[in-house]
Amino acid sequence: MLNGEKTIIGAGLAGLSAASILSNNGVKVNLIERGPSVGELRGQDFQVVRNYGNDLNFLDSLSEYGININHKQPIRKIVKYAPSGKSMEVSSDNGPLFYAIKRGHDEFSLDRQLCDSLNKKNVEFEFDRNANISGDIIATGPILRNISGFGYTFDGIDVDPEKILLFMDNDYAPKGYIYLAPYGKHSASIAAVSFDLSYNLKMLLDRFLEKNKVVSEIIKNYKNKESFSGYAYSNFPETAKIAGKLFVGSAAGFVEAARGFGVKYSIMSGILAAKSILGNLDYDQLWKESFGGELKENLNRHFLLSSLNNKGYEKLLLGEKIGIGQYEKIPESVSSFLKHIIFSKELKAWQQQYSLEKIFK
Image (cartoon, rainbow, N blue to C red; front, side):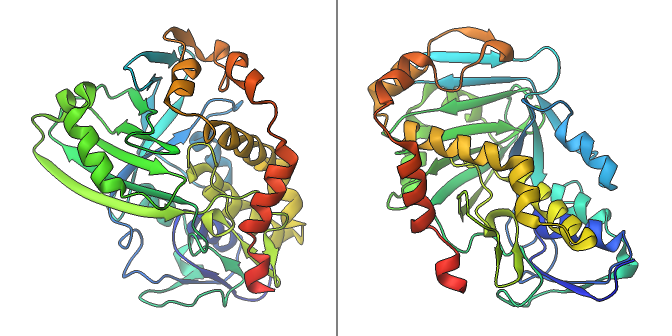
């Protein structure tokens, strides 16, 4: 058993995951959260966890760490739309491509489910306190910002519960995309995400919801609509251990740079930070072996996608229905004319621009 109390700053997905592993292994944890309770500060929306590309269902595999995620919705199709309306559908018959999960303070939210996995006897919460980085594990959420998002949750609509819609159009989501993520048959989040923080995404999304025929038909009879917004930080850091502290989740930049997904990396980095403490293991080695390759791959995809205009999106989406086994994230027809991009130089410049070490060392 490890002696000594550990302090975690932030009770989001990464902080709760780290606290779960530590507390269930006999470590006393002081969990400091600037919000009034778990999941309260962020509001409520629906997010997706990517599931394809893994040998195991990701959320189900967490049970080996004592984390049981029971409230989730399987997603088996994703339909991508070009600006012209041409679409490409990717599906899976073997298992979900994604899981939709609820975020926030609702009893069925992922935040609350992770909280339920804690050994409460070994955890002391301090709410309504902003402690910055004065802890052992830093799970504060984004310290730097290079992704922004604005969206709405809709209730009382009719939506396919197993299909995500993704719209690529620089007129409405410059250097980003708009997504519709369902949660059951009658609820969905629709949001615009951009890697350029200068745009008014609310104005662009409102215009999109009015003009896009696919989405406007889905939401035309909605009963309730609530907005949400936020920022994220994406990087492939040279190190996530700075000044002796372990940075996890989006505090470390563990958000994939192509689409802005971060749930998987938040949970895994929290688990790995706890494992590094329990076993006196190299934290950087753990996360780089676990998901570092994915982060780097998605930065390369980001460099490709951010160079595309609307004509490029038309070439990217081939207007067909395919299985996940035949899916190429970046078709050769598109990547071939973008090979002049030198990814190693792009990556180095990105790391230097968004380095946490410059702030904390």
